[in-house]
Length: 298
Image 1 (tube, rainbow, N blue to C red):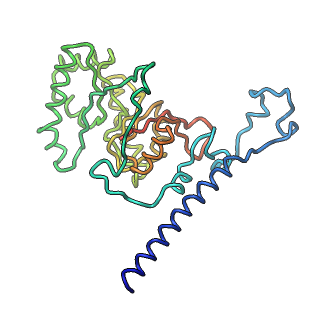
Image 2: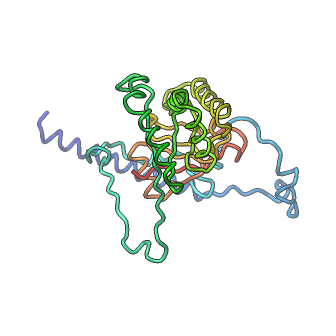
Image 3: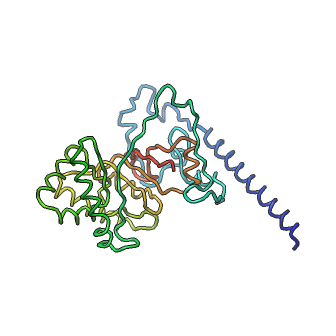
């Protein structure tokens, strides 16, 4: 086979891929244009309140119907998003992957853009070093400095996620420093986020392990500080799972932030302006699993 034949074949393949993408978009638009209408009799009559017992009948167990999970007012089904994305991997350099971030200069002329700066430190309980190696070389110094700097200025804040390291440091400090930690936590200067023993991986972890480490961390926080996390902070897991969101909601959290998402998915969400969303799983009773989530833009 000559080079020209291969080039022509590649052009045909590229054209077919573009046609498939266009077709998927067309099918998605057609699907979203369909409305499921019910007769007044089926809805229980024109004067039936939305809070009536007729409308509160429990749905059968299982996944939601497709029309209830479609793109539009009810949200975005991520499996449908995958159908729209091209199967490519552009080389845009480390941490960029061809995702050019831009904005309009006059976009915030009338209402200033509000930025949230969150001092934090991510500490892996074992990666290139052992747990004790990281703790002795870096983590304990970070937490020692945190205690000093937050104590110097009440405007300063910091968050911490890995309770395994926090508990080790707690064991090493004296009662005076422990009292200062409790004061900083009570004043809102120091916030414990997620509250897991580690920042758990989510891609292929069993939910037993995810739940076990979450319980371990929350029990420690309740025993020693009397606090319960309200926000999740997941900036370094290998992927993100709706199962973890489900567990966090069950543990009492109401907000979460995620970071490690494929560049193509992140770019799609940015273009659609859906980086902030209510994350709902495709099982369980409607609304009970909803968690307010934000995906980092880069």
